[in-house]
Amino acid sequence: MTSFADWKDKLAKTRVLVVGDVMLDRYWFGEVERISPEAPVPVVRVAREEARPGGAANVARNAASLGSRATLLSVVGNDEAGRKLEALIRGEKVISLFQRDAQLPTTVKLRVIGRQQQLLRVDFETQPSREALAGKLAEFNAQVKNTDIVLLSDYGKGGLHHITQMIESAAAAEKRVVVDPKGSDWEKYRGAFMITPNRSELQQIVGAWRDEDDLAEKAAQLCRRLNLSALLLTRSEEGMSLFTEEGAWHIPTHAREVYDVSGAGDTVVATLGVFLAAGAPLRDAVYFANEAAGIVVGKFGTAVVTPEELG
Image 1: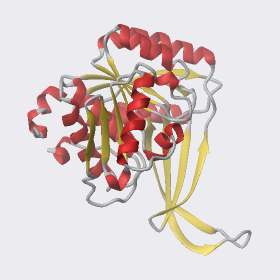
Image 2 (image 1 turned 90 degrees about the horizontal axis):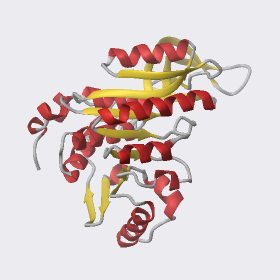
Image 3 (image 1 turned 45 degrees about the horizontal axis):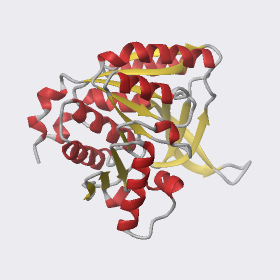
Image 4 (image 1 turned 90 degrees about the vertical axis):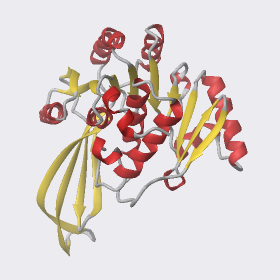
């Protein structure tokens, strides 16, 4: 297996197009000193606030952190959260191509943290309009020819309404597509190069498996049905399993300490995409994605992996 240093210069020459559902992750940190007299819930006295890019925006910032020229295409609202999100990703050297929907509140996930534990999460989200989505598809068709790989981050928020057309357009331009899937309808991912589900997501589609052989057969059948070249199953503490027409390849987790798994899937698809764009063999790309996931789960909230950490 090659080292990260062997790929560093090649990664810096890659162009990655990230498309999907973006969100602003807000964190309110405070102290819990008493229980509310109004209801049996803790009272958090907020002392600090923080905001980070989430969803597809976290995929893009992870790709940029590894040196790639990352472009992010999505729909946001014409509001404070959308402007904040755009400012954050520009600060991390991501090129933003946002379609603004005046009727759409930007998706926000607000997490309340007390004594280093998440006490509550509040989600604000609305489906984007057809006009904004149509504008995004036109922009995608203009951008896809000038990228090395396409990463589609599906969080089920409606931002990938035209995903079938996007995959077809990428195929016509001879660009590979990696999809981080969501939901129960995976027919829309037909023709992608690769999908990266976790265990619960895959079980929702193929059902439970009896053993590793049964899992391999179910994964192979799904790949044939959807015309996929590969499926990467992320298995938390069990590591990852890569399924291709050559068979199954299992790689154990390299997590040093699991602190927070939020955003780990974003890091996996970003790392995979950047290394594949650089010309890495599939197993090498999976190896580095596994390494990156092991690092990022040791960090709080949505986070990135740096070249120094992988090197």
